[in-house]
Length: 248
Image 1 (tube, rainbow, N blue to C red):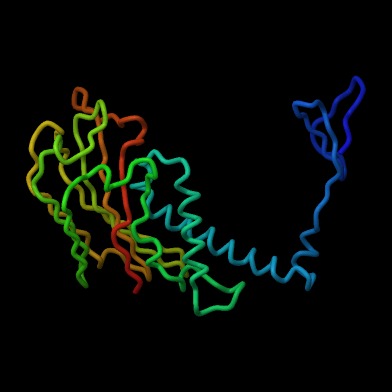
Image 2 (image 1 turned 120 degrees about the vertical axis):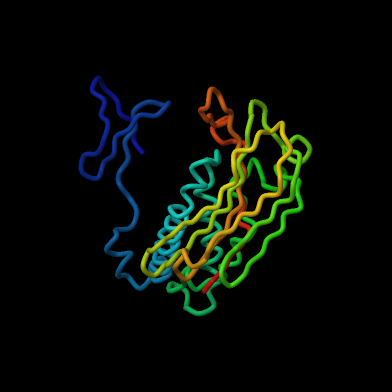
């Protein structure tokens, strides 16, 4: 690494040299590393090529899953969620007992490793809803039964929230084709100061084609002002959890 001296300072690249500014002044360094051609063809980089192929499958699979869950993720204030989904997807890929190393894929791994994943690390579903929730998984649908409750007694209500909403979301994925589908069942907007009646929510599996399914239960808090909804602290208190999985 060289330090630039003189009146003229440079930023950017010239040939194999990169010029850049740091707190220690303007520096220069020569481009290093191994060429892409060598990595893709040299026998000594066979393991690297295997890793790259698996990383690519993991990245595309994680993106497909995130895109399908967009209606839920858009209301969750967790900036590290994308990274956490990618990490758990890699565990699914590495659990593949069918293919050899370098050929392993998310679609042939243990899909159940995603079970109980909290989509908001700072606000878990269990620390938000203190209810005995019943889940039913039948061949035709996935259902949730929430008993009648008093929000102020059984919900961790954030400051400023006037209402809450509970949603059951199902996604269907086909990692081979990139296909995805999403279905939601949503409760009414519930005032936090009034008792809530029992809430049944159900997602029809027939509307979720694909080879893999995931089911999420989420709770969202809002503030109502003159008939308009406003998010509480950018969704920082909203909770969502993967509570059901299915591989066809």
